[in-house]
Each structure stands twice: as C-alpha cells, then as structure tokens.
Amino acid sequence: MEKKQIYLSQILCLHKKIYKLLLLVFFFLLTFFSKNSCSSTLSFDFYALSCPTAELMVKNTVRSASSMDPTLPGKLLRLLFHDCFVEGCDASILLEGNGTERSDPANKSLGGFSVIDTAKRVLEIFCPATVSCADIVALAARDAVEFAGGPSVQIPTGRRDGRVSLATNVRPNIVDTSFTMDQMINIFSIKGLSLDDLVILSGAHTIGSAHCNAFSDRFKMDTKGNFTVIDPSLDRAYAEELTKQCPAGAASSSVTVKNDPATPQLFDNQYYRDLAAHKGLFQSDSVLFTDGRTKERVLEFAEDQDGFFRSWSQSFVRLAGLGVKSGDDGEVRTSCSVVN
Image 1: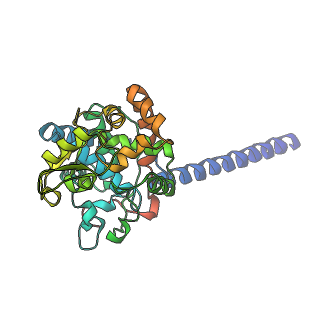
Image 2: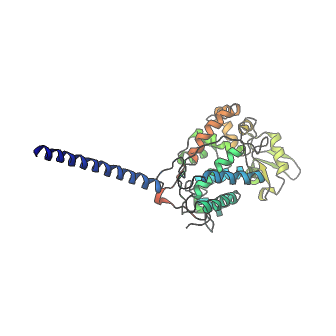
Image 3: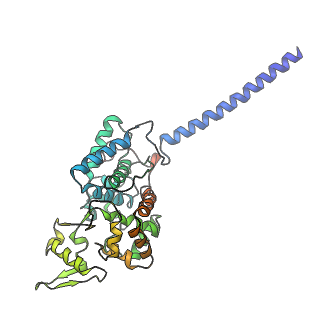
C-alpha cells in the first residue's frame, strides 16, 4: 500500500512538472505571437502567413507601371529617400493636405504616387488592412532598382504607417543639391548613416532626372551669349550642354534633365564614372569626387560595379530601416493618402 501511495505521489509530481512546463511553453508562444502580431520589429517574410503574395503583388505593379513609363524607377527610389529622411520610413510622405510633407515645395517634384496607390488597392482586395503603405514604398523602391538593372535586395518588412506629416519637418531633414560635404555628413550622421552610406546611396542618382533649378546656379549665360562656369568642379563641355537643355527661364518651368547623361535609365555604376569625369549634375554629387574623404570610394565604384551593387544592397537595407514605426506606434492605412 505504501509503495502504491509513493508511486501515485511520484506520478502526481511528474504531472505537475509537465503542467508547469506546458504553461511556460504556452506563455512563451503567447508572447512570441503577440509581439509579431503587432510587428514590434521588422522581419523577413513578415507577411508569409497574413499575405503570402504581398511582395509579388508590389513587384508586378512596379514592373507593369515601369514598362509603360521608364522614368518611374527613379521616382520610386527618390520617394523612399524623401519618406525615410523625414519622420522615418512610415509613408508620411504620402499623406495629402495643407501643411503635410507632400505639400512642401521641396517635395512638389516627387512622383510615383500612383504606383503606390495602385499596389495598395490590389493588396486591399486580397489582404485587407494587412500590408502597410510604408512597406509598399520600401518594396516598390527596392523593385524599381532591380527593374532598372540593379541588384535584387532582400529587405525585412513589418513597418507601420505614421500619423504625423508636417511640411516644417522637411527642410531640416533632407539633403539639398547645393549642400557641402560637411552638411551632408551631418544629415546622414543624424540618421545613423555613415560616410560610406552617403557615397553609396548617392549612387541612386544613376537613374532619375532633375529640374533645371536644382543645378542652374552652377553656370550662367549672359544676354550676349557669353557662357560662364560658376562651379569649377563642373566639366565645361557638360555645363554648356546643360545650358542648352535649360535655356533662360527654364529654371522655374517643368524642364528636366537626366541625372546620368550616359545611361539614364540603367541602374549601374556609370554615376561614379560621371563624377570622375566632372559630370556630376548637382553640387552635392561633384563634391563626392573633389573631397578627399570620399574620392577614393568614388573611384573604386567607378571601376567595380559588382562592388557597388554589394555595398548598395547593405546601405539600402539601412536606409529602408530608418525610424520605422512598429506596434502601437503606427497603423496600417486602408488608403495611403489619409490616416485611418
């Protein structure tokens, strides 16, 4: 009888231990899934269960739109920069209304909004209230680079959409085309990006275009037709060609010039070759070659496209992860232009 009681006691003790272990496992899983459900951190394949084809739907939208309009890759990439540098990568650039980031004059020339809206509409049909606009912007920029011939980059997802968008936050946070090296370094440093990131991410200018007023102060033509190069770091022949593309009065018009005169629609390392030939379109481009802190890196990328692509992949992930919102810090908008 005593042996039977001891045996039962041992069985009961074992059951209690198993019960406690199961409780621990349960609470661990509960914590794990609750964290993931509110997207406390970014992760690869974030939508694997909630919307498995999310990334494919964005990619197909970008491919279709870019096939009809080859200028879109540059616009989508620029859109990500302007979003992430202000309030973080939270799609705050997409919000419409007076006093929003989108209303600031510095953002008036942005494009690609229709591509984001199209992708969002498709996703809302198949995966309602699931995929954030912030993730769509990041994925679209990633896919735009690949479509233009650049590297394929895997980026984590799980960003939430921000609720704040203020025009007053734009100018202090974005790089102007007339910035000095120190000014650019300061902005990038504040964002947690390195000098190397600055050189690499400036390579985005290998695609896209710019309005004449972004660089027209680097040269001038007087009323007698006499041409003067104001910025000595700019190749004279290239500057003369730019004056033809930007005639008098074009600075305030809709006239645009390709960032890269050689391969304007191809994401490659030609941008760095242009810099070495003193054909950087912006002052902020040219300074990368004239400044001793970055010149050698420019020359490296000018000779090694694969090296640029590898570096781009790493810096792009850092860019797309700036100031992301997660969990209760944001929301998943049903329409990208307005908060819920």
